[in-house]
Image (cartoon, rainbow, N blue to C red; front, side, top):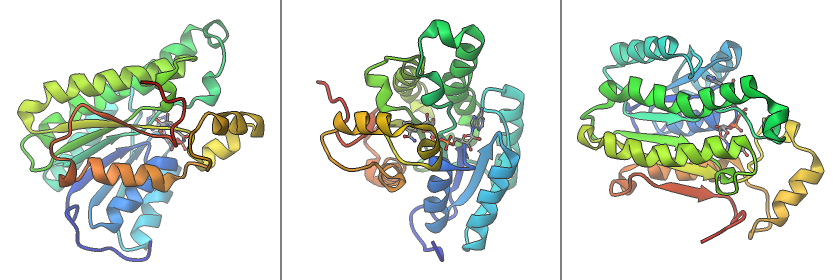
Length: 255
Ligand SMILES: NC(=O)c1ccc[n+]([C@@H]2O[C@H](COP(=O)([O-])OP(=O)(O)OC[C@H]3O[C@@H](n4cnc5c(N)ncnc54)[C@H](O)[C@@H]3O)[C@@H](O)[C@H]2O)c1
């Protein structure tokens, strides 16, 4: 990215959780490049600030805020501050999530404390951020929430998959609840996508096992998820709400 351009996203305010790296940063880059004002909300202050600085260096309007999506007070404070400074919020991307690799084990091995934190971040985080942003988004033209589920939600071999199945269900619930505010709510279920974290976490054996379960024989890339985000947050998707779009190369497809 080297400059910004005028698009339907110009001057729209986008609040992206887990914005410091991976998908969140890539979503921020794509929206900032298209003229949006991007807020990167991350529990890691260094990652968030570095990502925002990178976007600004490329001509984007970007800032970082620090919050844990599972913490109501922190989320409300961050969202209210952004709404007060910028007049409202148009796009909320509930992307922050704890990852599959750390939960690729039986429930008894994880233990209750680790499982509670998983559901607090991956599920309650989506509820907390959506409820906190509702007022700031209500009635704004094209207002859209995008949740990040996972292809793991379709198999549910791990607690991680269950947390992401709940995100799919919640996407339907929120779409109904927020209809009266004119806010569409959709989700993306990515397959295995090669972010820096995934490259560092997954063994080559697991990567090749996943690829064997895809229909398409190539690695998923961040830009595949970015394209889906741009579509679902745009006016082109104005008749779509409550849906989860799989972007997975056909990973473990079932009818
Ligand atoms: N990469 C994949 O292959 C893949 C596949 C399916 C789903 N997903 C989902 O996509 C989302 C992003 O994945 P990624 O690969 O970009 O992850 P990542 O680990 O690279 O980045 C996640 C970011 O979220 C932040 N974060 C973590 N917990 C947080 C919290 N409680 N509050 C605020 N910020 C927090 C981290 O600091 C980090 O910057 C996650 O929800 C993940 O489960 C990823």
